[in-house]
Amino acid sequence: MIITEILTDRLILNELEINDHAFIFELVNSAGWLEFIGDRNIRTIEDALAYVEKIIANPLIQYWKVKLKADDLSIGIITLTKRDELEHYDIGFAFLPGHTKAGYAYEATSGVLNVLPDAILADKILAITAKENIRSVKLLEKLKFKYESQVTTTGKTLLQYALKTDEIKIGKVTRSFFNLFNNTLNEPDFEPVSQLCLASASIIRKSAAHADVYGLESFIEPRKKILTDGTLQQFSEFETFEETRIIGNIAQRYSKYRKQGMLNDVYFEGHGHKFFHFMKEADEWKIAQVIWEDEV
View 1 (tube, rainbow, N blue to C red):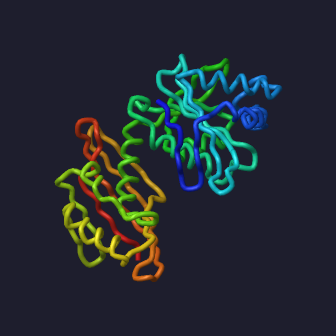
View 2: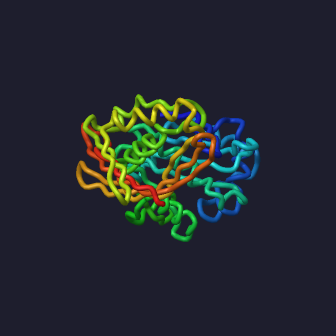
View 3: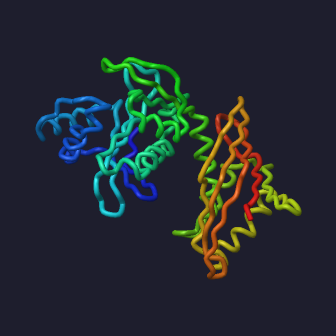
């Protein structure tokens, strides 16, 4: 499991390298790291180099350095570790002072969760944090991690949170569905729709007066036309909030969404609500139905 580069809207995540030791020296001696993660006794640049070499050599640990796209500034790390005392991999995050209240940790952690292979995901991903680290606890809750128990690791009693793999997979499918219609960079590719949806999937647009009911082909074809003939340009649609409920092999996801673009060369934006209904087949979650209503 080596995912060397991950891109998000504002960030670039790269696999930690030997020449990152100066940045690691700064990070592990920052106030937040020392208070909530612990003193690693890294007092010199040489100590930091040895620390980075040890991380890179361990196949059960992966660190990604987080940089801002805008200026290539290194601001933090995301970690993935398989500890002897924990049954599953746990994910962690740490950022330099001055970069802790802009949503970077949420964006970077989400980016990693979105690309982890099934072999790593297994049944769930864990996260552990000190109960005094209120900011970390709030971030885990925003990422939909649920509190499980207290655990003792590295001589400390910590809170253990978990995010079930099914929730991660459903999130991936949902975001991929939204991205089908994005033409901000290139013409959209609709081929993945057959992997995301059941062949019998229905898509319903509800308004106050009536409901338009589509099958996959009748829904995709007119949207393919306006997204590729210049009618609708720079279009994107994305979740701003979600709640997911899973029972056995069926699930429902409620999404608030925003959309924006240029329609006939006139900028527009909007928002509304979607319900996704999912079924699990052969360990894959697929969309069985989408119902949406724009807010007026």
